[in-house]
Amino acid sequence: MIISLKTDANKAQIQHIITFLKERDIESTDIEAADGKVIIALGNTSKLDYNEVKGLAGVNDIHELGKNYTLVSRDFSKETKVIDVDGVKIGGDNLVVMAGPCSIENKEQIERIAFEVKEAGADILRGGAYKPRTSAYSFQGLGLSGLEHLKEASVKTKLPIITESTGLHRHEVDGCEEEHDTLHNVIHYTDIIQIGTRNMKAYGFLEEIGRRTKGSDMPILLKRGESATIDEFLAAAEYLVKNGNPNVILCLRGIRTFEATRYQRYTSDIAAISVIKQLSNLPVVFDPSHATGDRALVKQLSMAAVAAGADGLIIEAHYDPDNAASDGAECVTADVLKNIITDCKKLKNML
Ligand code: PEP
Ligand code: MN
Image 1: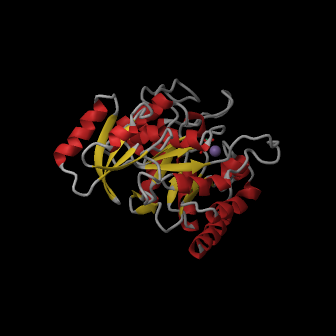
Image 2: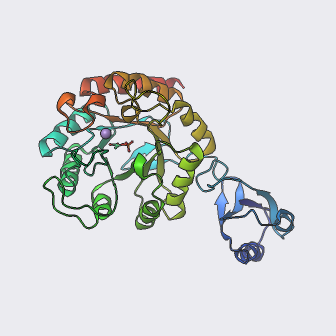
């Protein structure tokens, strides 16, 4: 619930409203919003007597959002949040492109791809060190050494990096040693933390990430769960913001429908981009690679996402897609990436 205050509401009146809410087990805080002072009441406000709240001194109006999210909503802030990653602004006028391999395979591979995607016009380098694989027998990622290679590639190319955190602990795997706090390692090396589709509803993990990054500027890219509704997706983003990190980027990457997966890996939720831009104040990016699972479809879907209002794209790229350690079928080469970025930026400028 958002309680807008009268322009002449004084400190004592504001404190009285906050105490009134606290006595009813509702956390609240007063902030300066774009259109004046407001009190944000978080929690179950359904039992409040709205007329009683409206009658409190200093209250101008109340807006019951009726949703599981407040802080990430457009009602909370009319302006889209602009997230600055080493000077790359996500959510502003420019289209931001993140590109790189699905997984980091070795030092030479990530370095070569980093230079290639930079030359192609990408703003941010992606690469997975901890891979959430469907099969326990598939390559699980290099772990800590992968993060080190990614960071070195970032230093050499001066591209900020994004990589996924899949959990808190990793047992010995693929010849890599046991890691006791993989989230700590990701936070230490990366510029943006990615939370994958499989973890969107891991609420305890979301809380942990929000708390551990509280007060830092570390952005988090949250992918939509493959069977999550738009409301569930925004409610998950609220966990991160409520627990201390407001720098959240929403990422659509296709959802599961009745469509046969032999045609496209998931069904691209392009219209959801426009819908979420109306509902939420967070920047929205689209992942055409995991959505389609097919490099032949990546350009079309990238263009469609930009036309729908996406603030950015995250695209898998590899110099040898057919021999990539994971997701080769959807990886594009650098020349294709360059063509996608050129045309998508042109399209963005036309909007
Ligand atoms: C990825 O980006 O490499 C990935 C595993 O994505 P998703 O969580 O969308 O499947
Ligand atoms: Mn992948």
